[in-house]
Amino acid sequence: MLAVHFGAGNIGRGFIGALLSQSGYKVCFVDVQAPLVEALKERQRYLVHLLGERSQTLEVTGVTALDSRIESDRVVKAIAQADIVTTAVGPHILPVIAPIISEGLSLRLQERGAPLNIIACENMLGGSTRLKEEVVSYLGKERSGELEGNVGFPDAAVDRIVPLQSGNDLLEVSVEPFYEWVVDQREIVGNLPPIEGITYVDDLTPYVERKLFTVNTGHAVCAYTGYVLGQKTIFEAMKDPQVRETVSGALEETGRLLIAKHGFEAQKQQDYMEKILARFLNPSITDPVSRVGRAPLRKLGPSDRLVGPALQMVERGMEPKCLAAGIAAALLFHDPEDQEAIQLNKMIEKEGPAKTLQEVGEVSSDSILIPMVEEFFLKWREKSVT
Ligand SMILES: NC(=O)C1=CN([C@@H]2O[C@H](COP(=O)(O)OP(=O)(O)OC[C@H]3O[C@@H](n4cnc5c(N)ncnc54)[C@H](O)[C@@H]3O)[C@@H](O)[C@H]2O)C=CC1
Ligand SMILES: O=P(O)(O)OC[C@H]1O[C@](O)(CO)[C@@H](O)[C@@H]1O
Image 1 (cartoon, rainbow, N blue to C red):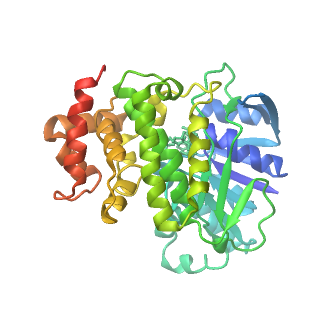
Image 2: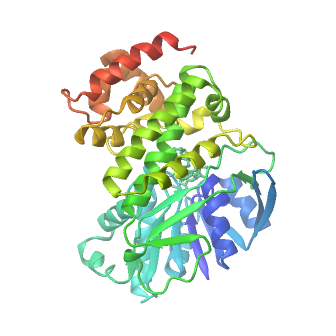
């Protein structure tokens, strides 16, 4: 069984690739970083360290890699022959890999290959659907019709904290022991050979929103408020009472929203939230606030982890106070290495927080969220140690 996985980064090697390999697939990573590709080709194995109370190391075997910039023909052939295609490249890279995926699918359709499922494992709502839209735009109308029943793009929610890697080995990856991979089974085509660790559901929306608006919301609020208060890592930030209070408050708010919207049981949501707070406090993980806060324009987007739940709460007459505090802190985030942070800083300087939020988060000028965020923006700016 062959799995083609785009993105041999942290989630690629430390989560999706590892589970595919453990399920008996030969995993062919596709990446654009030559040293990574070379090392995977040469060694065909790597180690995954599970950082928990009792640390454990797994060996992932049967892997190889292709560089899509110089081996595109081989990538196309691999897609034509694969039993599954997955991605973990980042939402902004999905349009970049769509052309080569569409070439692979063209060849597969021409050769009358078996049905294939393509699963985008990215932190976003509807990642596979988004990838499908891009692929369709390259395939053209005629060929796109042939996807029906032959190629599925099931959406998915993926959850595992994989911080930046600080070890000397290019391939070794340290991850938290917890993981969750939930896939929309209604979109699966053909017989997908079993994959260890996937939970199939009929309606993904509640799962993906619960994950994005709890794990990612809490993480983002922690990263941005921690940044403003001078904390370097998520663990350090969670030890700061102001951060901890804002994070817990934001998760109580999104919890109320999720319960009202999807009918989750209050106690179960409470347990889920507490488990997540404990994951942020894993002392074995050193996760810089700059990684978790990366790409703030994306994270401040209208349906993403901060503005998304805040606007939905406002619509339902609920007050997103701690979310507003998190959004305000995000507007103050800076990282000279992060292009989106640089752009955000320029917008704040030129237009101020209210206009920036209207533009980036598509928040209407008369939304009560605007004055709430403005108030916190001033408070955080006064406290800011950066
Ligand atoms: N790190 C984490 O804890 C989690 C990350 N995610 C999501 O997984 C995705 C990947 O995140 P990470 O693994 O952390 O990032 P990463 O930066 O470690 O990995 C991304 C990989 O994609 C590769 N890439 C970039 N352009 C490419 C292209 N055109 N073709 C093929 N490969 C390309 C990069 O070279 C890199 O190896 C993101 O959408 C992220 O939101 C989801 C859950 C957890
Ligand atoms: O990967 P993104 O969307 O940039 O955001 C980082 C977030 O994703 C994760 O990497 C995994 O869910 C979290 O650590 C963090 O909340």
